[in-house]
Length: 148
Image (cartoon, rainbow, N blue to C red; front, side, top):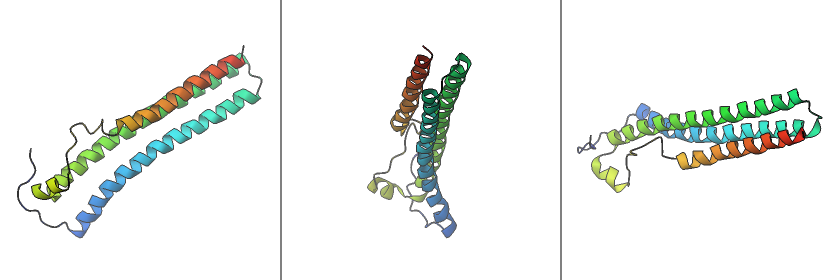
């Protein structure tokens, strides 16, 4: 399916609003990735403080480890869900761009259609996932040493 070779008609006022919202949605989803990572890191911090300040029984250590794992896994799944939502948003935007811009404009603006929209930006998302995984591992190790 190629780009429309004919000239395009101008967008209606409603079309312009929706088009801008498509870009805003992508921006919002990227911010959500940071928010998710920051809140999980905040939970890790709270769990660390509890582990550091309290004399923990075996059950309490297990509870903190379980809480850490649940938070980490939830954060990773949430980041992957947002990445999937970004894929869908990018597909919609690519489809809109094909309709809005003629082939000449599309080419002059250097616009391309991503072949794998889920992978686009995954390098960045993987970095955030690594933060959650490493934080999870370090915190579980710390909590385990508190009982020794």
